[in-house]
Structure formats: structure tokens, C-alpha cells
Length: 330
Length: 180
Picture 1 (cartoon, each protein chain N blue to C red):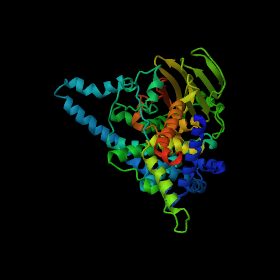
Picture 2 (picture 1 turned 90 degrees about the vertical axis):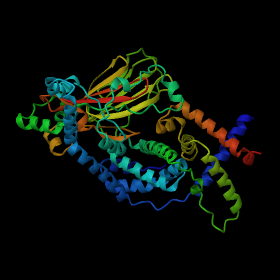
Picture 3 (picture 1 turned 135 degrees about the vertical axis):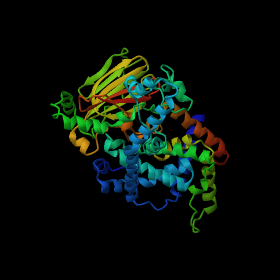
Picture 4 (picture 1 turned 90 degrees about the horizontal axis):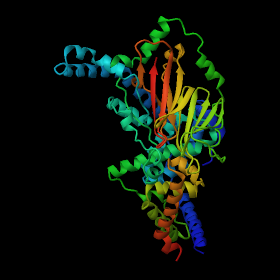
């Protein structure tokens, strides 16, 4: 009886909502051109920062050195930036919400945050945390401590391409082309089949698709699609809900569990054309945040470039679904 | 929300005309969703525009044209959540009057129409933003709890319980008028 009442009430609400919906005034729809213009404007707003970021960072480095002189010995002060760069043989980076985040970065380019400290070590208790209404799908954000000199990804690549013969056919690129498929291809269904695999067991695998159980509650699904890799992290203990879904531009190389994280390695092959077209920086994104470019500032540049590739390493926290992307030009 | 997959495919390849058609065909649904959630016509319009900017930027990477609607709602829901928190910061008000169009003078049950819609709009304004999102996506757009969970970035169980709670709240607020 109570159930019947409930159903009736739900139907009544649905009817009222539809009536209300029909009464909503729709304002004049802005011209679609305004969307393209706004997108273009946002894109352009990023350029000045990218262009001048190295100078801003260089100025910051100079100020830092000046402040350090009275404190540290002269020799130590001279070697500080290089040491810091060597120590930081990794870098994390970037994922913020497109427009807002780019604007934030322009205002506040240096907000270092330790990756370990930033990622909560929740492993087996994420669902309770999610239930309380907190949004655990935010991506980890951390910043690079690369010095100004190391920001020059484009310069480094240009010198690599123009001072050396073009690289021989890269086997990784061949791997990429063998893994290619239609960009609008339907994703594999999200684990509707019943299975109880052991931890670490690969549930399904072919050249374009891997699904692996990474602990009692989590499974990760990696789909290789053309030149990008889609990652979906599932909660297998609650009807396979997705707790994180995103993609990274690059060719899939490997993946494995490493302590509290699940790590996925990719590479992004850079060609001379990419440099000329200014499209050498990899992209990443997810449905919630949209697309974003992995910024130049967040890519570590080693002293001597030996390959025209940007190596990408994604670390996922299976407990929360948060992820970080580390990038390096080696 | 009805979406022409062909337009999505063409827009994903950079076809501006296709994207424009997609924009005009989806605007109304996305605007209404934003208006229900935010309760302010001007902000809803801005949020929808920003959402379409994000969609244009990201559509090239959309893998499956069939998932366009849920993807668009997901971007919009994130934008709406941000706008709600901005509104709270600047002490904005959920202005449910914006939801109701004044009925034409020829309407037979004009008072009843206004009263019922006003009661529902008033009840909606007392819900949390996320509860409004869930009930609109469920009732008006017919999405399943699982689909809504993906759109608003919450576990399916949370969506189910919130939907149940939302009905209970509406029942409490409107029950006297509609079930008594």
C-alpha cells in the first residue's frame, strides 16, 4: 500500500515537473559564433603566459638566488638550481579545469605541492568517503620545480631535430599504428559480466584493451585508441561503478601496481611537424574537466635530449580515483 | 535530450556548422537543467555558454557519439556546482520565479496553474543543488541512476539514496497539497 502511494506520488511529481518545464521561458539563444570566439579567446589567453613563462620563472629564479646568497655559501648558491633540477628527475603536473585553471596558472605559476602529500592514502575505504558527499574524482594537481632553463621543451626539441638527423623509425610509433582504431569506436562495456578474479589478475586483454583487477575493490580498464589511451577505474565491490575515467594522448607502453598506486606508462612521439605546428605538447582530459594541454612548465627536460618523445607516466590512486600525470622529455 | 549522432561525429572532426546545429538543438535542454539547478536565468545562460565552449574544445576527443548527451550533462553539472558555490560565496539567491513563465490571460485555470507551479518551484528551491540535478535528470530526462552517477560524478548508491531522499523531501513539502 505504502509502495503504491509512493509510486503515485512519484508520478504526480513527474506530471508537475513536466508542467513546470513547459512554462520555462527560454531566452534568446546566443549566436553559436560566440562559442567559437570565446574558445578562441581562451586559447589565445594562454599563449602570452606560455610565451613569457620562462622569463617569469627566470626572474623568480634570480630573486631566489639573490635571497639565498646570504644564507648559503657562494658555491652552493651557484649550484642550487642545477641540483634542484637533478634531484627532481620527475615532475608532476597539470590537470586543472581548462579555462579556470589556465587563468589560475597564469596568476600563480608556482604552487608546489608534493605529490605524495597531496594524494591521500585511502585504499580500502573510499566508498564511505564518497558517500558523505565529498567529490573524490578531482585530479591531483601538483607543480613542477623545473628551473627556467628546463622549461624550454620546444627549444630542446628543435635543437634535437635540427642538430641531429631525424630519428630512425621508432618501434614505439609502429606499436602506436598497430594499436590504432576508429576514434569514435564504441568503448567496451563496463564490466557487466560476472567475475571474481584474483588480485593482479588480467581479466581481459587484447592489443587494444586491458582490464585488470588491482585489488579487492578496484579494477582498471585501459583502452588503446589510436594515439591516446583511455583509462577507467572501476569499483568492483559496488556493481562496477566507475570512480574515475580519463584519457591521455600517447601510446600505451606498460602498466603495473606500485605500492599504493597503479602506474600507466605512455609515450608521445614528437615530429618536426608537431614543433612547427605548435602541437608538440600532449593533451589529456576527462568528461568532467574537459581537455587540457600538459603545460610546458610541467614537462621535465633532461640535460641532453636523446629522443623526440615525451614520456608520460600516470599514477592512479585506486582508493580515490585521483590521478597525476608526470611528463619528461628525454 | 535528443542528439543527432551524425552532428556529433561531424563536430568532433571540427565541422563548425555541425557543431552550431548541435548547439541550437541541445541549448534548450541544457539551459533548463542549469536553470533548475542554479535558479538564476542570467547565470544559467552563462554557465551553458561556458559548457558549450568546453564541449567545442573537447568534442574532438569524444570516443563515442552515443555518449554525447551524458558527457554534456556531466560538464554542465560540474559548471553548475561551481556556480552554486560561487553564488553561496556572493550570497546569491535561488530565484525560483525565474522558472515560471506568466500564463497567458486566456488560460482557464490560471490561478491553479500558478499555484501548483509556484509550489513546486518553491519546493525545488529548498532542495540541495545536487538533489535538483538528480531529480531533473531522472524525471524529466529519464536517465537511470547509473547514468546519473556518471554524469554528476557520484557513486550509483549515492544517487539512488539521494533520489529517494529527494522524493521524501518533496512529499513532505508538497504532500499536504497533492496527497491529502
